[in-house]
Amino acid sequence: MIRMESVTKRYPDGTKAVDRLSLEIPDGSITVLVGPSGCGKTTTLRMINRMVELSEGRILLDGADIRDQPVNALRRSMGYVIQNAGLFQHRTILDNIATVPRMLGWDRSRARKRATDLMERVGLDASLASRYPYQLSGGQQQRVGVARALAADPPVLLMDEPFSAVDPIVRKGLQTELLRIQAELGKTIVFVTHDIDEAIRIGDMIAVMRTGGELVQFAPPDELLSA
Ligand code: ADP
Ligand code: ADP
Image (cartoon, rainbow, N blue to C red; front, side, top):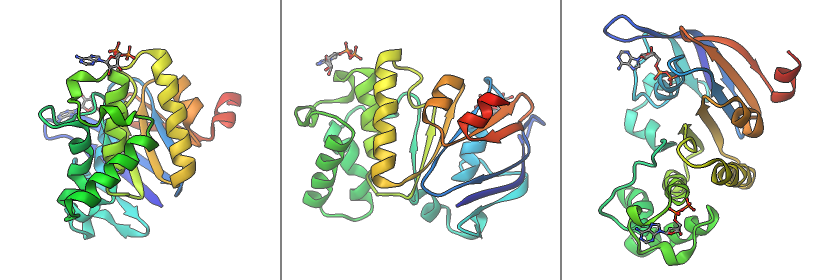
């Protein structure tokens, strides 16, 4: 479980991006951070894998302060997916996905096998393996991004507006796919979006934030609707 205890982030220029945020993110669930642009969602997500260091409070992962473990080990336990997939443009789709297990020291054929399996899992046709990212649609690229984040089999997935740049119909397909993957693999997913409909569709728990970085509500979708 990820537990945030009164976490505050102040950037060096004085901007308070997150203000005393407390949250418990249950294992094996999808928790969505939602709120308007600039309300501190990305900052919150990046504090969990220490791409951003918090200013006050603490974050516990399975009871241990995330600052007490090596940052590399922490990041290895958390896949990270961003809006435009952030793929390596000069590498094939298969290599994009296989790079992570290769970095973990897997031999080439095992890494390729893993990448092939993951392509199937995220709904990418095997014929795309030897293509390059620019040859894929936006939706396909996001699938590659998800496959790559899953490659080292991390228990946690951090996803920052992963489907916001694809058109609405493709986005629905990706959301359905993510729900299936989560049900099959039991990942703990923290998902950032500014789209409340997307939050309600995929979230087990929804954290509503407001400008200034405060948490307004933390509830399952049905309770949110009745609030
Ligand atoms: P969101 O993801 O909800 O759009 P962010 O976490 O990106 O929000 O940003 C929260 C606030 O912190 C905003 O006011 C933003 O301008 C500010 N901010 C983000 N990154 C930095 C930074 N590196 N330095 C200073 N201010 C920042
Ligand atoms: P969508 O509208 O489904 O998001 P596109 O219209 O961009 O996708 O692409 C449709 C199909 O054409 C996809 O299967 C994609 O792989 C393929 N494709 C797109 N651009 C290229 C390209 N430059 N070279 C080869 N195939 C491409």
